[in-house]
Length: 585
Ligand code: MSP
Image 1 (spheres, rainbow, N blue to C red):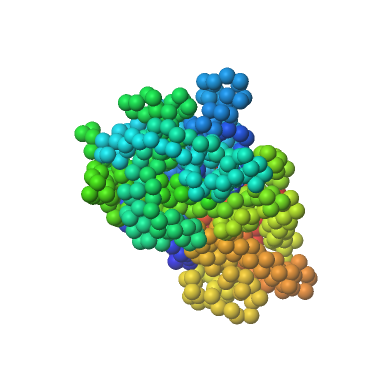
Image 2: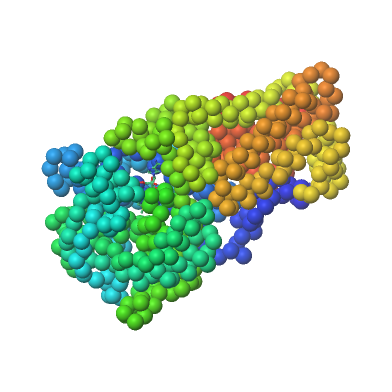
């Protein structure tokens, strides 16, 4: 009997087993997932919500697989951009913290409203983070990976990024203004004393790492982009700015005249947010502690615009932390295997393209930025989450936000899932279905036993005469398909599989017409049970995407959390009982 119920567990069908089976085989490491930390210089927009939802569907999915998840989000509060925005807002310098306190709260609110299940929300302005940044700085300085130099180049405050001559040009709108070619953001010339990081020493090691790990960057097009960058020489990068220009940030240890460059500081949030420096009492690296807190990160969601920082700069900093001290001959002696070093490199970067509005980049000056709070208010949280992942879940190309498309997709899920639920839950159908005794061997109600055939394990489906066969087969195959796709970060395709099952279910029930007087009661019964099974499986598969809708659906089905014990009772419960009515949409 247990064999049947395990086979019916939505996420036990394929992939790793649930937690109780994991304890002996997999070392105890939190599954660690991160979003970029957002600049709190203005109100959140839909791109921020997209990053949060993308990470959230994987966090929720991993929990369904029985893993404990650390899920980090937060705000990136230092740098020129914030310093300027605060100055503009208050009309006087030095009030950055106050400014960030207010705006950081809005990002927190966004996460709460969107039902994002992050386990921490970290701000770079905290003391713990400052300590971690200073610790990394000191270690790299002592090893010779940081040195003082003179930097002359272009800087964009909007992008918080240094650019070389080759990366800038005149603005198409104003020939007197120089802009970054890639982003179009205004740049200013700066020539100043800075601390530099020996990025150039790590090109070979980074290249080996990305080549050796096909899933280090996903989708492949972005991995190729990274391989392209690493195929050419890497220049050392500036990692500080004079405090006279930038005072809002982490002061460089032992040199108050310099402030740490905002990206160097921000990227370290992923380790500071997971308990870096993980030291034992005698100061050695405590690997058990590091793993228990989640490091290395399993999945990092980032937009394509910040891929270089995550795929090149952060791994280089980590390699430097791990490596032997720099000598001009060794070129840094960087370890070649990023997965096996004491503080390993993150496992997978999931890069995504952008949302546009009317095919144009969203920007405050154009006034086409979509407000995520207003959108959730108007359309509902789950409808927005569904839309973001249904359209944006392939990650690869830019996607356009449109109210018509959103309406269409909201209608799609309401019609497919809502209507099917109403039909299956209808008391009229329950009244027409003939309750029957369970099969003595399998415990399944007889109409289902006929459908499953004599072998009640996952492979045992038989067609027979029952027109519900195809639907049951699809429903039973769904969790495995969804699991395989989610394991390879294809959230959009996973959602498409769920929609296919629902479409087929609606078509099938329309053909069978269990509400018609002429339909034999046994067929009504099997249609109803297959429908309930479809809804149970769909509910579990949709839970990462539409947590609230799925929870209401599963509660109405009384399917509990889908665990084995629950399943033992599931089938018998629906043998002649009515389903609770519930409003799904
Ligand atoms: N603070 C940096 C990240 C530091 S991570 C150590 C940053 N912040 S941001 O607020 O500008 O952007 C945060 C995320 O939102 C990025 O992943 C970015 O790609 C994403 N988006 C910003 N605009 C977007 C769209 N229009 N569409 C989709 N995502 C976009 O960068």
